[in-house]
Length: 293
Length: 285
Image (cartoon, rainbow over all chains, first blue to last red):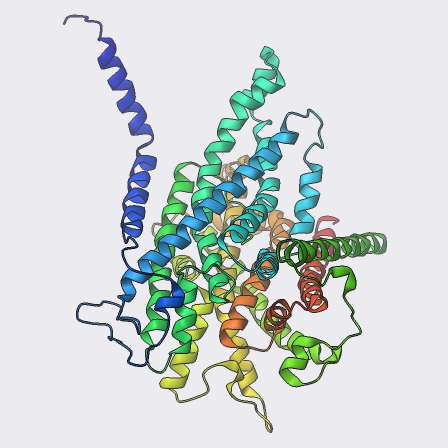
């Protein structure tokens, strides 16, 4: 048998294949996310979807009950409810993803302010702040902000991301503390690596990997909160699942399907996203954090 | 013990004062700075008539707030009681059968129903009750003037149900995760090799060692339950503190917002105090 040396290209392709095999679960989950988000966001906005225009009952309503041609029935203006649910849910998920990403990024930056400090009690301020924050339910603070600022996406995203950062920063600080107690980190200190090198090259990558899992699990939870805020009329002026359900309540005698189907749709999508989030978190070995929202 | 109790009560009071300060800042920022309101937090008057109650019942005294407090406390009591009972028993059971296939199936119903928006669920109950049972749908549709007020209990249970599902799902996972973490420690292997049975290791060693830690988990669902209460009460038109808060928000009645916020913080704080005392008495032995 000839002992031939492999070409550089074949070595690279083999190592790429090995790496892909190692991260196969993450790749499959990424595809699942792509497909589900693609389906959700491809609903488009080819029709006028301003709630003030479509969620009204004209003199001669164009109701159609769920069935032929319209899986979820139609609104009084004749628009397909299933199509509207997709648009509204895509919006909720997009808002949730932006707020969660901002919140986690802010929490990470806050923790990094303290992470390079060699003191034993460097995170004590963050932790004591977290203990006070737990006394106030997130929904309470969020609703005060939304009601006071007059609603809107911007205030929702800002308030939610601040709440996420306040509640997840203490958990993140614990990851840093735990990360520093590992045998490899102790060995790195013995070898003579500086604290900054250890934090940047050893601990931060582990924390970032966990953050992706937390991000995936938080999205459906924040989307549920967005629906609730919209239901109370404190969301934005745009189409939302909460707004659809709230309108459905007003026309409950004439068109009960308007109060029923948006909720079923939202539940199914939230369940699917929760399942994906849980699988992502498990694949990336993220530690679960205390549910706060 | 008395010293410990005094210390914890002092810490709780400081935390409540901090919550008051934080809520005041949040209200001022939201209404005054972002909302452009001309009324400010420092101008609020606790002696003026309570506007949300005045709108609803015509009585503007603070004693009118006692009824929403009682109604919401009933919901919280039912919810938290069921969450503790079910969450702990289910969580311990899930951890006990960890080696069996399909073990996650017993948690699945809770996790699935926790994804259902609670405010939508109570509307469905109201619709079903009205159309199928021909009974009052929402909570404010009938007032019992004589005889036992069974409707009060029915309404409280309907409001509590989605919160129970959410709380139980979180509690089960927390209890299960904590037991799982303990059961992989080296002492478990040691006991197994010494000839202890699975049952003895689980109930007499792991659970006994974890008693303090498990009590620690008892109040972690409360902020979630209280937060969810606001949405569910509004959807079911239930006259509780959640609805009182929302009406206070609508009419910019700052004392009402602060009272509702402090009521929530007070409940969470007092339960945390009881939990701390329990953990202290368990671990000081």
